[in-house]
View 1 (cartoon, rainbow, N blue to C red):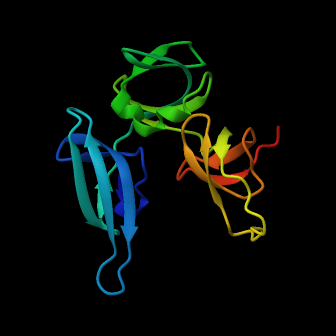
View 2 (cartoon, helix red, strand yellow):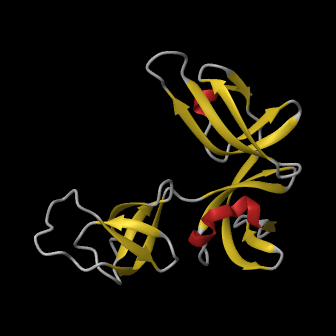
Length: 188
C-alpha cells in the first residue's frame, strides 16, 4: 500500500528495496524556501541495522501490511518481554530492541498494541496516555503561582516529567507517552 512520506509515524513498517523497516522516528521539515521534507529514522527488521532516510513530503512510500493486535504485558525475563493475546491466550516474546526505551512504562497487565510480521513482533505502541505516580519533586517556591511555570519531577518508574507547582510526591498523574509530558492529575 503506497502512502505519502509525511504520513509516516513511529511504529509504521515500510518496505524499501525488498526489505522491511520499522519507523523509529519521523519528522516533517518545512523550510522557508525549498521543498518540505520528511526525515525518517528506521531499523531494518532482518538484522536490526538503523537507517536514516529523507523524502520529499509528497513522495510515495510503500507501507507494508502487518498484523496489529492488542496484547497484555505479562513479565520480563532473560529471553525478553512476554505478552499475551487476550483473545486466544497465545504468548509472544518480544526482544528488548523492539521495546526500547518504552520498557519503563511496562507494568503488570498494561495493554499495548504489538505489530507482528510473519509471527515476529516488530513494533510496540503504548497507549497515548498512562497514569504514573510521582516519587519525588521539588518543593513549591513561594510566589511561583504562574500557570506556565513547571517544575521537574521523577515518577516511580524512573520517567522524568515537568509538572505544575501544585503536584507533590505521591500524586498520581496522567502523562502523554508520545513526549512524556504532563496532561492532568489522575482521577482515581
